[in-house]
Image 1 (cartoon, rainbow, N blue to C red):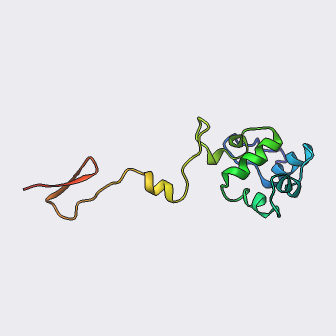
Image 2: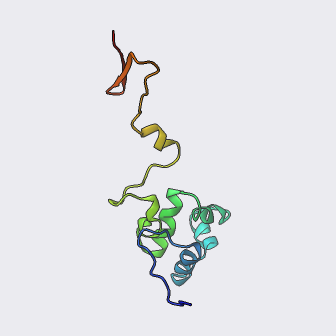
Image 3: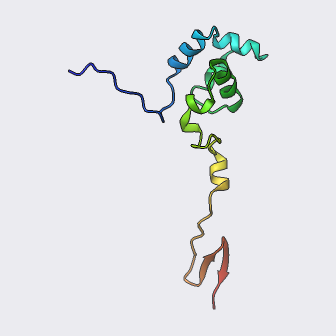
Length: 115
């Protein structure tokens, strides 16, 4: 039985308990942080653990004193910009047009009919 602790991958998102512990070390709670930003409940702050909510990610990261990419690397590109998520991924992806018949071919995302 190996009791050695595995090293955490740098590309792995922090566990919610680790985020809460980091906030507590800085003197914050999710409720206190929510109230400081004018929110009535902390539920939207805790929803950030499972869903990407950029504004709340910034608030939590600022309270801890790191960039949000440090806490949630799966949500950011290596240059620090946010990854597209949800419908925006589909909307901004390069369309791959498949011809319906042998006479239609795709060129530069426009369909050209051949004779």
